[in-house]
Image 1 (cartoon, one colour):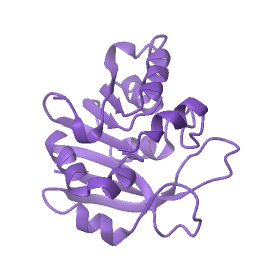
Image 2 (tube, rainbow, N blue to C red):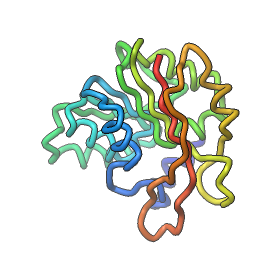
Image 3 (cartoon, rainbow, N blue to C red):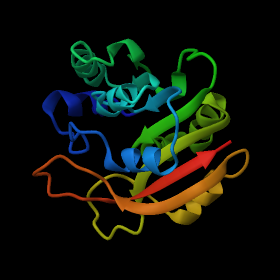
Length: 197
């Protein structure tokens, strides 16, 4: 995968890292009343959302390609009251170690729209391997309906529906705007995709 991700964290070129839990994640957890369970976040960055999930009672594994991001997540973890329910791992989505049994909840904020451009079948195979039967996967990805050329990679509704065929079942696919770092000047249009298996 692109090794520039770690450099972007090193220089602070990370407009997606707001330092606050993602509002769409919160909305979905509340709307669907998703109960605390084992969870994994792919592309966890500096750990904000993983720690939020842990604070809600989830037992969370946060995975990211960037050692710099994971080091920041570890620093954030230490003083957190949810520290016992959260751990972080530096790993490439395409070369994961054994993460253990499948998870009842998977979260991906911005990983899929990058990895699908590299190897979409392999990305979907990871979701299939690690999403437990009856579990839910929430993917937040850039929308091709966004007229702005800046922002995250973009994917169309048709592409998402084609990719997330059985064994996945789409529970919702709707648009929202990504949270971004204050002052970034961006508010990218995105897809909120919730699937079960």
